Picture (cartoon, helix red, strand yellow):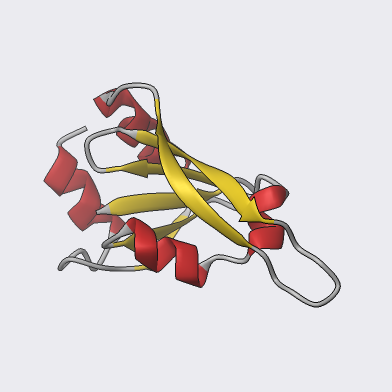
Length: 103
């Protein structure tokens, strides 16, 4: 599971894969650093723009790992989350996510 935290507002979105994120998020928002991304092990990801936005195209990005996994990253995401906006993998509430990670 991959956690995507909106930096402005504290909404948390859960995705089952990087490919799902790459198809759902808008490149302009990624360029504007509107998200922080990690998986459920605490592995951070950065979005790398592979096709820039142009007048005729929305652009594309892909995720790449950044650093080493750290469970404290998951705890940080959860502590800054105001609400769960998108669920996956049976997680239906923020409380479910807290219980799953025991952080």
